[in-house]
Image 1 (cartoon, helix red, strand yellow):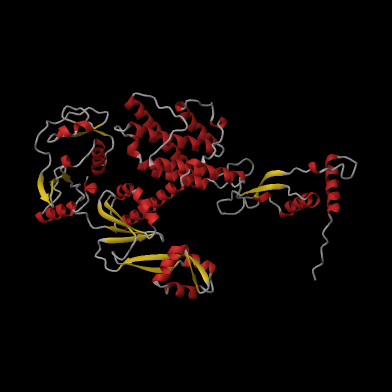
Image 2: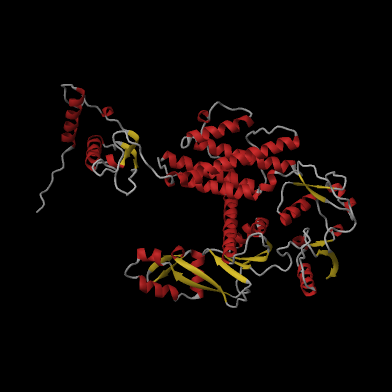
Length: 560
């Protein structure tokens, strides 16, 4: 029989606490006037190591504070983990697995390699990229670059990365104000968005010699995001932030000596655009699904494909992707991006399979029954689960994240591949593109009948040949502009590298590559039969005719 334990009254606890304080202070008086409430230290935060977190000591301290005064001694408690030995045990002298007597602490490089790879190196890579492009901007336009706050940006990707930055600042302050120190993972995800998506997708804009305003807006956005992140992260990585800030302050109109003198940035909620963040997130999902298909079929990104079909029932989802269609086309290297809401045209079938790893943890005894019920779901029930995000099977709620949606083609000739992330479905034509093949064959339409600009020509050269640091000049070496395009009919336009003097060959009426003129569906044009290296792009008359036929079926906006 367990004996009953009497709970001491607040008066007794107060007396015990007074006696403790009396021994510490050395006084002789007793009573409430000797030990007032202010004598206890009430903390906003208490940081303790796991090894020193004794339940007995911690419990007695909490009771002695709460019972007499009705207050907890600490508003927030942060408990640090331990650095364990390489065998996973706690370091101790008796186990001889800890450094003692001034011995060095040994650790493996893998322990810090992750932080270096995910946080520090992306910072320095982005800093180097920023400084190089600012230097190029100054040399090209003969004007200094000076950062000033409050610039208004209109580019969609600029607004996205600024919105993402302000959302992170808001999250950072909210977490830190509640002493939740797990913000590094969010910062790591942000740097992935910043370096692997924003910088890569806008690389051409940073070197845009034809549009000064767009180039300056891209550099301003890059600098603004970088400066905000450096100031925000200064308390967590003080030395790295200080080093980077010293590079940035030379471009500030007003600056202080150290990043640690700069006030922490506050989130500007007017710059947070949830719709833009959602649209870019969906675009990323499509690009990642398409890359998986390419990896699955061993198709390198440099090989162009004809079409990717994106299927989703939500018109808003398709509308978001329509705004970013050009990025999808470029990143997946496809000619046509098709957005549809129905899957009947491509004969898609859907099967649901349980995720045994997740469901097995929740339903150990009922798993077999649930598996049978999940596999027996009808098409209507599956569509409803996709719409609402869950379904009830055998009285149990099953989330869509706890199952796997398997999309298949009823009739597949090997030309199409399907991929899905339980939200959107993409179908990609993985057959070799008969129009733009690996030799970069190109149909050149008559530009005199279709409005074009030098900017379009720059984009086309970049897309075809993968170079972005070049100039378009005439036979005299003079850079061409929009006003000169109409006068260049029948003339040769040379693609030359920037900041380098080259000897141009003589201009000739005959093209450098073998070509053939064609007329198809009231469309006149010229097709290149060999690439600039002299390699043939087409090998049969039938192949040539089918290519021209398919090309002229495309909309005019897709041909240019």
